[in-house]
Length: 329
Image (cartoon, rainbow, N blue to C red; front, top):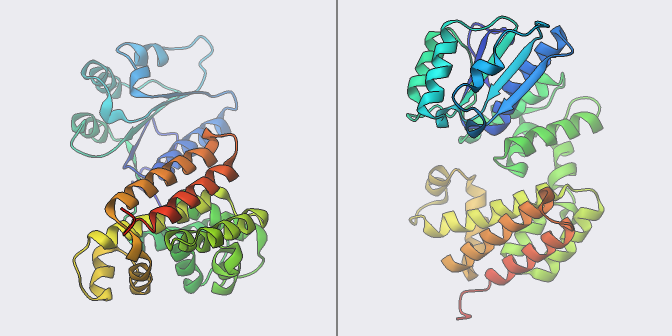
């Protein structure tokens, strides 16, 4: 989960959320907004991108109000602010306005480091929101999600959930919320298996496995069953993406023992063996075509299209065809 500094008052004049994990950045913003609205239900929230925060805009937003209203001003991607706007922000940090909370979201790299240093020097409340690239970090995140919701889950259940869902924190958080809402008592591995890896027909990962193996008819059958039994389309696109990316990673990796490749690629050893079996018909061009298909399906199920089911079916057919690309041309 996001790590915070000792100054943990969300109504501090300045909160600095540093990192590139979108879920944690959004949560940092929501925490400040919730605290402000708890103190004043009429709090005015302004959420701005760098192009919306022009020179002079911050001074206008933070100028004294006749009604002394509370405000939260959120600045996203602060590392991309123009030089003149950075000057405005630095000047504001010297003397922040009362009843106003400024939230700066910064990627944390070298770009815009001067503003990052100035915010820290000004005593900002800092929330660390790093990308969780290591399996152990994602496992800790899942454990923290269960704890935060006041529920117990066995270590095996947490690991099974990470293995089933993958690296997307939003999907992991959604899966935890679903389990907590649906299941009473301690959540164990059997519960996770029942929801995410139990019945083969209803598993999003079964859809992905059949598709990357080139078994289009079986993949489509599994897809339709999954959708009929309530599997979220976004979980299916995530599984498809993971399946294709695993093919691409392993095909470009140097040969070696499964344990060595597992460490290099961040996969469990059993998955290395499975992907080796699945990748036989693939070519680099096939991987590229499949990844584009997954990206289009992902956009389709997240509101970019009128028919999520069709978007998924189209992606499954393209992936299955790509899985048989070796030897066709």
